[in-house]
Amino acid sequence: MVALRWVMVSALVAVPATAWAQSPPPGLIPGGGAKGAPKAAPAAKPSTSPAPKVIDPALRADVERRAGTFTLTSADGERACPLVLKTTAAGPGFALAFAADGCPVIPFTAQVVAWLPDPSGSIRLLSAPGRTVVEFTEGAAGTYEALREGDGVYFIATPTALQEDVVHPEEMLGEWDLSRAAGTPLCRWIFTDAPVATAAFAVRVGPGCEPGLAAFNPVAWRLEGGNVLVTSGSGASTLRFARQEDGGWAKVPERGRPLLMSRP
Image (cartoon, rainbow, N blue to C red; front, side, top):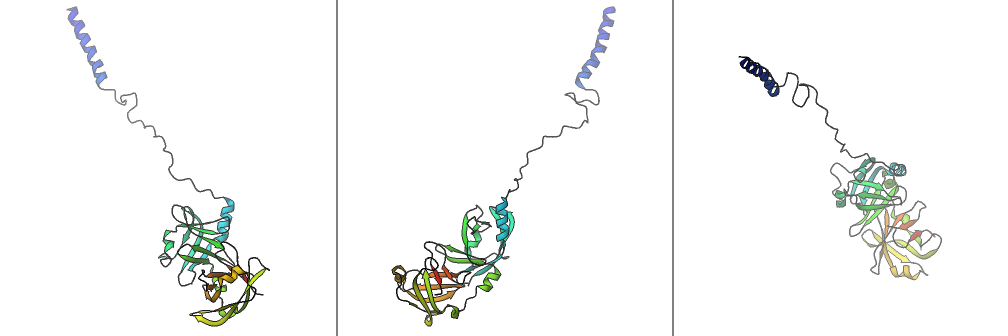
């Protein structure tokens, strides 16, 4: 009888122990946490936003000095587009804007997304990868010029510079000295008003012309896009001169040996 009671008591004690193992008490969850307790916040992910550009103060000053409203034109002035150079960073350089429809009359502009001033004083228009599409060297009174091989000469100028750059044929008539450096004439050209072709006039060469310049053998001059173009009779390429602040003229683009044209 005693043995039977011991078995019954053991069974009663064993049942709660088994239930405890299968069903945890209310308010607790397996693993020791309290049911309904807030979970630990996930670890913060590192930021993927690009770090802001740090712009050198000297570059910032140069950008602010050169930015503004310009007109981009072909050398003959027949193709032109408004161009705004901005001071806000964008892509590989700084932001710029053409008209709402871009500048379809000057095809290379389709590649241009930004601009950047160069320490040499030039302005570079850049493609999305940061390559230079065209580089404009600084000229006189707010104008810049560029030569694109196989394409031609282009200019960017402020509206004020364009207004001041109007040249009339009568201003060019008469004698002009050619030199490599100011004050050392090597040849003399005489621009006449005798027509030799459409919108072009005859050039005469004065005596004692330096052989290299004499070999150029100029035969005609004309105005184009605010520049003076002098055509060779020997098959050499046409020379282009841009007006300078002192009233003289200089060969552009400024590559190779300089050539200046001034009044005697």
